[in-house]
Image (cartoon, rainbow, N blue to C red; front, side):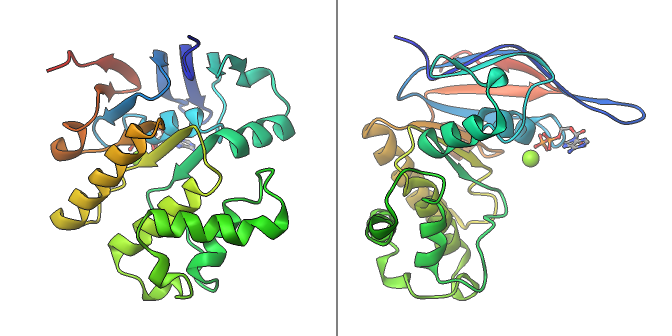
Amino acid sequence: MTPIVELEDVGRVFPGSPPVAALRGVNLSIGEGEYLAIAGPSGSGKSTLLNTLGCLDRPTEGTYRLTGIDVGQLSDGKRTALRGQRIGFVFQAFHLLPYRTVLENVITGLIYNRVPRRERRKRAAEALDHVGLAARANFSPRNLSGGERQRAAMARALAAQPSLLLCDEPTGNLDSKTTESLLDLFDELVADGLTLVVVTHEELVSARADRLVKLVDGVLTEEAPG
Ligand SMILES: Nc1ncnc2c1ncn2[C@@H]1O[C@H](COP(=O)(O)OP(=O)(O)O)[C@@H](O)[C@H]1O
Ligand SMILES: [Mg+2]
């Protein structure tokens, strides 16, 4: 079976003086339905790797194939379309729009997808229900707790029913009880067939994943299972 993600000798150099090699010679293959954690010190390239996987950034060296499609060869428009169909992204800072309701924020997750306009509200409401946030649909994100914001961002990422979900330090600002319930939701999503990639500093989180890779100065190594 074709892996959902295949990175081959991927490098990402940010120009500047001096240039920064955020990723170096990264090889990584992720199968459908796998749950992968990415760890590493601050500045080691974790977010750059996640942005690359999410087609928000392009490698400056090497090849990225998403479901067998060479992302580097696609036009910006085609790359955006592929992202809309395939990928859900939960950013470290959530990026929720403060002057829109929670439901409207989740609807924005469907704009780059093929969901017809009239169906978006229904799909967004279902996604909120899935993450246990239906009762907050008409709230402003400003009036949500940290854990609820996290769930709203999850709902927005899940509304388009992506096959690959990417989360950047999703438990960074959560208390241990809220972290635990987010991890339960992750387990449930993976059991339903989602491929999940989570950047995390926390042992509690990486221990629940199938695989753990580490980045140090842009170089990726895989930890032996156990
Ligand atoms: N847009 C950018 N322009 C220049 N340098 C960047 C940019 N984004 C990240 N970097 C640099 O690339 C390296 C890796 O950054 P990042 O992927 O954000 O690390 P992490 O998420 O592990 O903290 C850092 O040295 C950072 O300063
Ligand atoms: Mg980061």
